[in-house]
Amino acid sequence: MEFFQELLGPAWTPVWTLAKIVAIVAPLMIGVAYLTYAERRIIGFMQVRLGCNRVGPFGLLQPIADGLKLMFKEIVIPTGASRGLYILAPVLAMAPALAAWAVIPFTDTLVLANIDAGLLYIMAVTSMGVYGVVLAGWASNSKYAFLGSMRSAAQIVSYEIAMGFALVGVLMSAQSLNLVDIVNGQKGEWGMLEWYFLPLFPLFLVYLISGVAELNRAPFDVAEGESEIVAGFHVDYSGMAFAIFFLAEYANMILVATLTSLLFLGGWLSPVPFLPDGFHWLAAKIAFVLFLFLWFRATFPRYRYDQIMRLGWKVFIPVTLVWLVLMGAVMQTPLGYLFH
Amino acid sequence: MDFTSLVFYLFSAILVVAGLRVVTARNPVHSALALVLAFFTGACLWMLLEAEFLAITLVLVYVGAVMVLFLFVVMMLDINIEEMRRGFWDYLPLAALVAVLMAIEMITVLAGERFGLAPPSPKPADYSNTRELGLLIYTDYVYAFELAAVILLVAIVAAIALTLRRRPGRKSVDPAEQVKVRRADRVRLVSLKPQKAEAREEEA
Image (cartoon, rainbow over all chains, first blue to last red; front, side, top):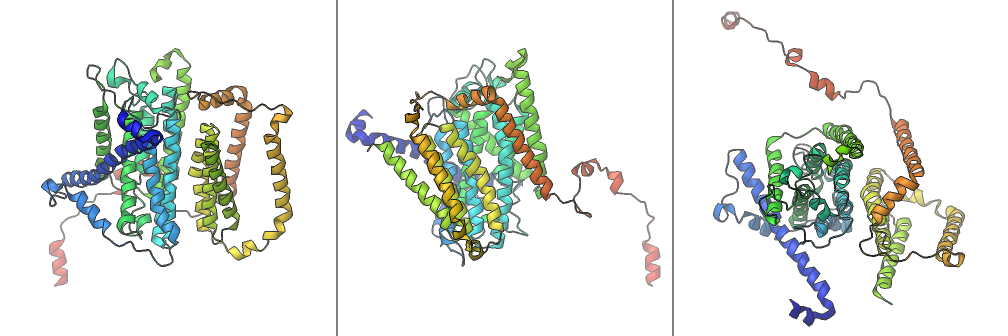
């Protein structure tokens, strides 16, 4: 490594950073591809059918075949579409989904940018993902796409508030916005009993469910209504432009699962004190949360739109506010150690 | 010119162009998007000034929430751009006044050193201005902060009260009522005698 450092001189830092970015994004993209495969197989088994099993052994090459197919398809730009914004929209959906990974720690030393305001950065970056949805719907010059984008954008904006409040609880417990510090704050001699999902249980539930709503996934996938508004905001996209929206959605799924694992489930910490910590624990937790998302989709029927709005505004936000006040009050008493 | 000033001029140029696009774009959606770009570039400039908390909050609040709602409204309105442009130059005196005021304010800040306003010294890397801001807001300036919060709350309540219309004959249902329903309220089981034979006789 030092040899390369000498060879490249001042160009070393950007090259090395770029290499690290590739090292994060490439596995993420493979994860996204195989998450679609896992989704189809797992939901298939839950519904007593096989799922995709034709391409390659056990259908393992299916995501690659899908990717190739989408790549060779023509991108049709609808008549009267706002050309620039139509092409910009998938980029705006994808960029925040990838940019948020900059501050995600994988172990206590393995992190691209260990910044102090990490949690705040993630909230800011992910809140920009909604532009992709809004602009895709508007720029397609189609009523179906526009209605779909209005519905999903309203839903994303509403649940962001509950999600933000749930994160306030985490940072009150950890006394820090730095993700490495937050995970280290969950370390203790009791293993998994020290993780934040126990003292912050209502916030954990709110975060998990808001996460599903934020991702526009079942049972909150009202943007998709096959009978009225077809597939939602990206109905007029084809080929790779459509695939980008798909990639962004699944990359966001993995992101929310990772954040849930880091903030509430102890990240890379081992669930029992006698086993060593490590990245494999984080990977296992992410896989578990992702499995939950797929399980939700196979289990619950779709929510009605007014029920979604009611759940977000009238149930989750009050629950988080009450719990935050309670936490703040208890933390001033000798019982405050419960929340640390 | 070092790298920092190069980045500063780049951001400033983008900010100025974006600001101009806000007022010159023909399509209101493009204007709103230019405003988003302006906010984002402003946040980048703040980041250069080591105000990372304010920068990220600007993105979180203005780009992530306020402008999304703004875009919502702009997209749904049917705005006739020609009509909006009619009085464009009539606002020139007012705009000039605002511009002069802003210039004076900027001069006061930039020439602050002459009036004894010391520039802030650079802080070490582990300095957390989130913590510092939190300490100030919730201790020294807690009354001002809570006053601002109450004013915002009043504004929200007022806005809702202005637009809330109680229309008679609404069909929305109270979820609590739905949950309380038991089977007996909706379904009545009646045992009927078999009537097949009689029906056949009638047909015949």
